Amino acid sequence: MTDYTRVFRLDGKAALVTGAARGLGAEIAGALAQAGAKVLVTDIADDGAYATAQAIRASGGTAEHLVQDVTIEPQWEAAIAVAVRKLGGLDILVNDAGIESSAMLAQCSLEDFRRLHSVNVEGVFLGIKHAVRAMSPGGAAGKGGSIVNLSSVAGMIGVTAKGAYCTTKGAVRALTKAAAVECGRMGTGIRVNSIHPGLILTEMGKQFVNSYVEQGLAPDRDAALAALLALHPMGRLGEPRDIAAAALYLASDAAKWVTGAELVVDGGVAAA
Image (cartoon, rainbow, N blue to C red; front, side, top):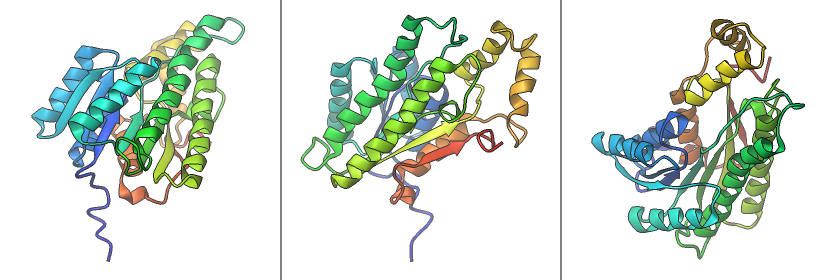
């Protein structure tokens, strides 16, 4: 009989989490470590990455940290090499690093549009590319694994003044499916899935609320927050732990027959 108390455990596994200096990335890194994984925390912000890794170690977990700009390919090669060398392999990659901005399409600059795609799409592409190389049979890790990409409910529905952001998250959604099919058919043993959060009041989430006021969509922050809350049928905004639990599921053997899926964790926004 399957021991369902064990299938969510990650003992003996090595994970790399990008964008983990704060917010969702930090929460996900902590959740994976709590489930038994050794975690490499990366972020462009060195102090934040160090703080996340230190918090994991203080709680009895195993963690390393590394400065990484996900838009630079050699830094991906270096990050995966560090994971293999210091953690003993690579079984899990969580592509969390991302940015957002707010502008009506008619006012959105091409420069800003490209900046969002560089981080949110190219960064995920590079992560998938180099994780697949390492995790596939014959690679530096070579045991297969799980890749979890952070998309957004904004990759599934339209959001006013978030056109550039929506396109990046829609691209992550499609890229996830393409990678899942390719990895499955090529016999790599690698699963690839995406998570689609609703609004969560991390620093990025707070920026999202403030942008409603900046774009004239609400008179003040309280009104903006009320309007955004009303979009969530469950009557509350998300918490980082809601997304961390979803990432833990997709990373674990509980999801060993799940690939190419989009796990929507949004309080009902996409269903409404």
